[in-house]
Amino acid sequence: MEKWNHTSNDFILLGLLPPNQTGIFLLCLIILIFFLASVGNSVMIHLIHVDPRLHTPMYFLLSQLSLMDLMYISTTVPKMAYNFLSGQKGISFLGCGVQSFFFLTMACSEGLLLTSMAYDRYLAICHSLYYPIRMSKMMCVKMIGGSWTLGSINSLAHTVFALHIPYCRSRAIDHFFCDVPAMLLLACTDTWVYEYMVFVSTSLFLLFPFIGITSSYGRVLFAVYHMHSKEGRKKAFTTISTHLTVVIFYYAPFVYTYLRPRDLRSPAEDKILAVFYTILTPMLNPIIYSLRNKEVLGAMRRVFGIFSFLKE
Image 1 (cartoon, rainbow, N blue to C red):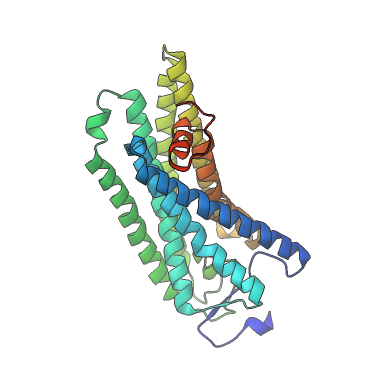
Image 2 (image 1 turned 180 degrees about the vertical axis):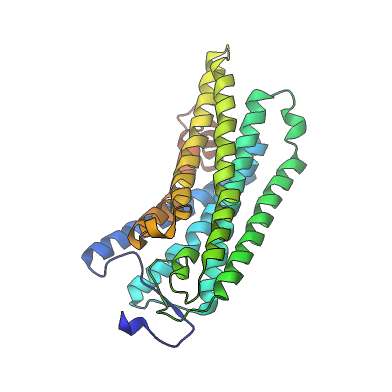
């Protein structure tokens, strides 16, 4: 580790992959996932934009989720792949701050957006008569704007604070991107106050929204169970199970990672968990929302001429 102890302000990202044939194989797999995520989310954004049948609040919110996922995976994977292929591990002080800012912005904003999507489904199923009034276009704009704004403000505060911490130890971050908790391990001052801020922030942007989402879907499932129409019940269950799958994949590793005390955390485990919410989730979301959604498949048929075997 001595070779990483230098006086430069730059940081070193130790990375995720071993420098051998296994690492090359895993990198090829990650690049494939990155390609699928980029194409999948771009297609979802395009479909929702051009198909009038998808101009509804739920799909308006879904288009923003796809945009966030596209930015999410683009924040970490290209730099990780470049460092591995070039043999370099460095990232500038400014570059680390930019990466941290966009990562935290996407993380917080997506958590709030998933909450908005849960609220949308709750109103659509449990209060269908008031749905057009409460989920107007202006309300969607406010939800989306609020998610981006609050996520950006929270991210800016954490990034500025993290970059102002004095680092007097090695600048080698044991991660594949500039994750603030991993950076705190290199600080030469007591960071308990900031760690408490991370705990509060995680609770506000992840834990409490997750509790709200599960309670909303609990009430939705109760309402769906008492539906008289089998077709309506089946459609509602499909929609809710799709949303819950996305929520669990996103929130579970995130909350587990950031709410654990430092003594119970390990860099290796943190990196593995980070793969779920930074790499796998952005790829899975468009797949889950398309393959289990006849409206999206129908839009693909109308726009791209595929899935022509499906009936409207």
